[in-house]
Image (cartoon, rainbow, N blue to C red):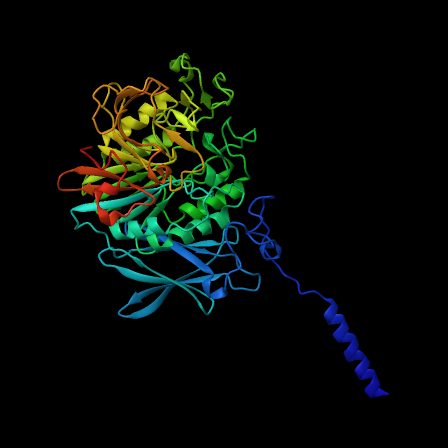
Length: 535
């Protein structure tokens, strides 16, 4: 009888335990209907259309991305999503005398699956190999480059607009950039076009380009599509009141925005003034010195005024002006903001620091003029685009004066259309030079430089037909020196390459089509490039 009782008890316990489901805990995102495939119970959801998130566990570290500034290394580790039972601990090891030494551990943030390593008193006089480790078998290796200050020429690759219309690899661009071997890489924004699914799209971007920034410093800054907007006017971080955000502010949850900025900018040098904007959203405007070249990184969207409710509607959208007879001065009035006083203070202070430096450049999302006439298709002529930094004009001129004060060039992206121009502030050609890199993929929304009268501007440089002095749709003075309309090869898509010659004080802008073979020389560039300037 006792034996039967024991058997019955054991059977009861077995069935009881079998009925209980294992409790799985996971962090729930504070926002709904955003990043649903990469947060919360991501493993229960359908296959991700952007990238396979269910990778083998020895491949769970997607990439590392870093900068070094003021003897501080900041390195972000980006992981694929982790299962609840997996450790959140990431380890950083450095190679010293042919052996690996663990120097720091961090826990990954479950919203975005990244973490940041920060090491002070970094020795920038030598190359240092690093590796990231997760669990027993996941390893990602790279190299922290020494500061190349002994070099006579410092080079930068500049890219933007990684359209999701092409989910493929970027093998040719990566091969070309590594052949050219830049000292630093700059991604000016729109690394992600998947407005509600940043984590998967950011990992996809990293897997496409990690062989570019595995072994060199890299600057990434988010633009409108990265934070889920078609166009974006941040207006100091406020919450937008309409679904497109044309009145200014963010349309998505502040937690989502913070996650995007954490993943894309945590590895940048510490901000000049870290005070958050509205909704507790952070800032990242700062500077980084590489090889005696001082790069200012600014946020030309976050503080900018939105057009809706401030200026009369003069087109099909609040941000499009199609009437060429409007008065540009009517839309430039007191109270409108472009960079904001905080960033202007930063730029003006940064401009004055010259000791130990050879040259300067300002990096941002978009250009300080209306540098395109046709938008989306050749039949869509737009007189003025309020998404560009040509508006508001007063804010534009304040920014350009600060850039010129530093004798800096300006490098950006966003417009899809590659251009080189010299800005005018009070007179033609009294402002800084600017290079907007082409879109990486340009079959999503093309733009053309195509003056309505189809005539060359004054002081045409003979390189291309429509070069010379023009007024943009805001009556800003610009001198166009080169443009890569999408009728060119690769549909106008590709990347920029900038060379800073410290001996001659000369900056050379190169523009390479996506299908180019850089080993064949300048003949492979877009017509009108390269262009060498003295800032």
